[in-house]
Length: 484
Figure 1 (tube, rainbow, N blue to C red):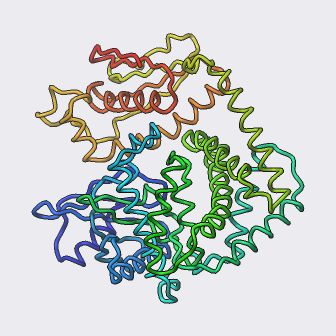
Figure 2 (figure 1 turned 135 degrees about the vertical axis):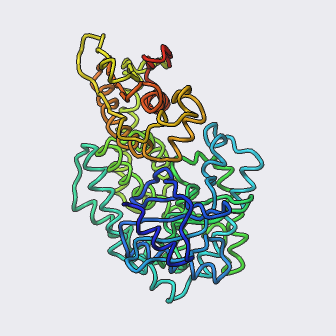
Figure 3 (figure 1 turned 45 degrees about the vertical axis):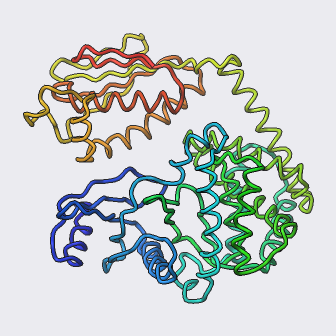
């Protein structure tokens, strides 16, 4: 049982058994999160990790940060294996979600700007209150940004993005500029605790107050790195004016620890924006070009736009061969975007792919593929807990809130759909790329009423939102038909 370690840790820590555990949606890591409900309704979060060293780094850093009055989740216990942690429940609202609408239209309102300024003003406290050998020795996998880690990130860009782009280049010339850039990065004097993954997704809002998570990859390093990470995050869509305002908030707070002239700060910051841009292009290349994950593919043009701004600003001039490569990548990306615009129609039409999705009862047979292509996917939902076994749900369907709440609290259907989404996303993207016109998915359960209806509905909404494809959805046994 996956959660047995968490249950035992809770029992050993508090001397009682939790009322229930609800699995939370997965994030970008391999860790699994559960909301643990105690008697009386109080909750906490249970974490199951795959790396004991990483878990212990988080636990020890959280204790040290809390002792310095920094807003991080309280940690209650870690088991002997280092794989299970109990920590404070900060709720479900992240800064990323809070600013979602503003980010989408690129116009940040007053409330969003105030919160962003507050977060930026709190960053120096982490960087300087945690700047000591005791904390650095808790860090994983390394205590500081050194030449090995800098070159690792630069080569990540080379192997996971540049090589996958198909662009020809001279590795020795590029390596020489990488060494030069690494020398410049490592010569920066202003050092502190480098959060490393400082971004809006790692800031939780509880009762209107920001709390900070996922700092276990932190280490000693230049203070500019975190500012570049936050303000030039590809999905942030901050305007130059807003970035300037957020830098002001950071510098004002930074003066409590060190006073750096704005001109000097911005010059060095640009170098770290370049370094961070190359690093994220490596990540987008691996996750997008290699693993074909749509979110990362869609983020590449924004990262290339940031790279082009650095070229125009003169930041890359000190590294002439890298500048040449960067310029070619920007041009290549621009051509690919134009080709994509033509393939999906300059008038803004949807991709030509049409997806048909069914929910059905196995007792009445699997739906035929009427497109004439044959094939498609059929998923069996009967392994999940069946709401139809309970009287209060027998007259409802997977579209009704009580059934939805039952399935999502149970969690089995969410784990099932995580795997379905990965398979469906890959297949849909490949069909779009190859110009195919039809793909079918079908979900079956005992009566075609609860689990299959829930699954078919959620896949339809997921694919329409992510890819913009047209969808015909048929809940066959309920005689419900929708078009997206």
